[in-house]
Image 1 (tube, helix red, strand yellow):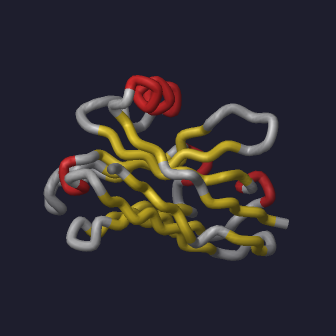
Image 2 (cartoon, rainbow, N blue to C red; image 1 turned 60 degrees about the vertical axis):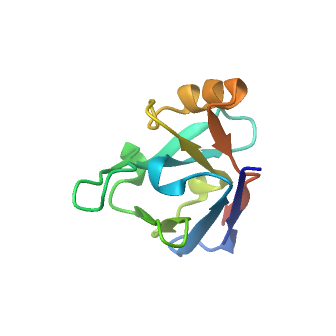
Length: 133
């Protein structure tokens, strides 16, 4: 049974920081590319950041343009946890944040991750709410 459980969300003031975590079980975590996506009320799902399953020496992290320089994605394969450190938060960062696990696909694409989830080839958590005011 695959489970991705996000935590660490909350309410912060503009300019503040939060660290989100995503604890994974039921998958071979080290073999999955991992992503963070978010959805604000009334808006489409937006890809936030992704990190490959490659060994640390070759591992690549990618970010949406509006997150570059503010967010840091990382993973601990031994603990099977994905992280998202968010700094200099803005009101427009307010959203439900989800982690997603996928293999061998377009892990930097929200539409791909949505389709993959529907097909059962990607896994999503239930989300954690981030509110910036």
